[in-house]
Image 1: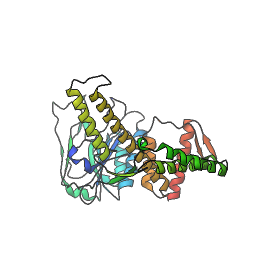
Image 2 (image 1 turned 90 degrees about the vertical axis):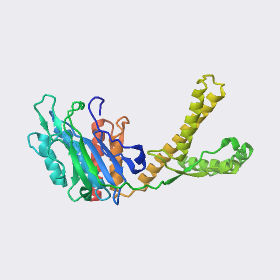
Image 3 (image 1 turned 120 degrees about the vertical axis):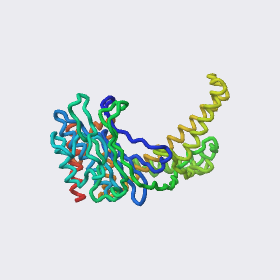
Image 4 (image 1 turned 30 degrees about the horizontal axis):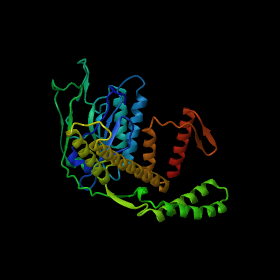
Length: 373
């Protein structure tokens, strides 16, 4: 959301980083995380619903539709908790959003629990309006309800500058130790160890043969040339395209290689600062610090490349019935507003403007939905 217009955030202690995984689902009003605990993980969906205003019903229903997508996606694998500022009440019927929220909860079999007190959570600054619009919502058959110790709605406090009061859910839950998974990446060739004479000999020997066999198909010629370059590399460079297993640490792309490079970079920076932070390029400490930063950036680039390759591989191998990947692609499309498609082709249709592109996307997803059914 635009700065100054509110938003959502989920904060946790770094000691439980290995138990938390950020989920990419939802739009800019939704944050969601996977919490590894007990026999079944929790999918915590934190939302800031649109407020009551003119023509806000469409955005309100669209946000609920995104929540519904997430519930359908994770209902069989996770315990689901939806929480946040719903900007609608389950205990009154005075606004359009109250009715929309009640209908949604009834249709999707989710709602508040009796363990939550009926108490105002919102107090308008004009002093005339108040209501309970902040909730923790659960599936009616959810086992997580039995783990609820208590739900507290705090009183207003002069130090609280918000027009909402905190709502606190306490669960009796045990976090589950997550095993570190090893990831295999291909190490960058050490060109400094390359025997240039052998490299040239292999290429000069096989390149004429490739040119003779060429049928003028550019894609095939490029693939053959790539194979030849790899062949020359394997002959001239020790441990060419060596596979390395790295264990992930922390979150996102953080792994063992980045962790090590980060510590070395911090140490080099610390020593450089302790000696007066000399700016001369020829200074030994400055050179070491710069080299350490380059190694760290290299490790980060390798991790990002591995992540992109993994995602592309999953997409290529996915079956038509893979609903999780289907929703993942939808949310990737939602969360990249700065990348605009200039032209889109589907079968024999071509679109070159925004509305036409959206119509083709809609038609494409409808066909996928019918195919899955």
